Length: 79
Length: 131
Image 1 (tube, each protein chain N blue to C red):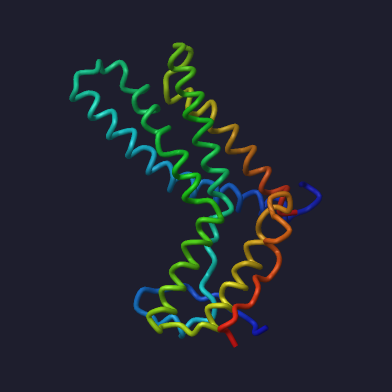
Image 2: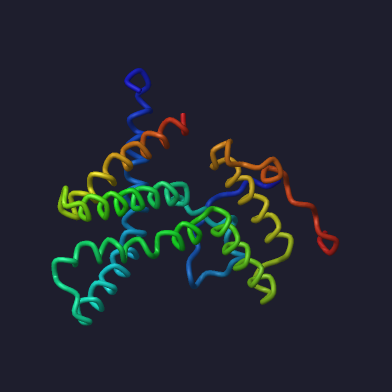
């Protein structure tokens, strides 16, 4: 197995010129980001529907704690 | 985390990565929500419903985005692109296989162990027409 370097794909270069294309680094966070948005939208709809908070406040009330918990979960998983 | 100085760095990296991904998906969500709100206002919905319409519209693309950005789909799209390069003669079949094996291993190493099926870590079987 040859040692593979990471070379970013560019539109004009020939594929044969590259060793291995760079893997998408953000892919690990896409699931967590989707959860954050889901939580924000759900709490936003709930709180705004019940007139407990403005919609943006409800969104933040759900999204911010989920964001921090997801980031913490990623941190602990990487250890 | 305080005993391990790398913990803070990992946390900051996770926050930045999560923020970047949230920005990408949030842009799509806001676009759909904004379009829905715009249409609803044109149709005659009261402005007091605007925040709820925006949030309801934001909920629409969340599931498609989850599927589109799943690791399996990302891998699938990359492999399909490399297969097209092989068909066009821009990439040799052996190098394509090498790339796929490397990417398989990389994904398996990056995914949490609870999500990795045993067969995902195995190298795919060699095809008949490959040397």
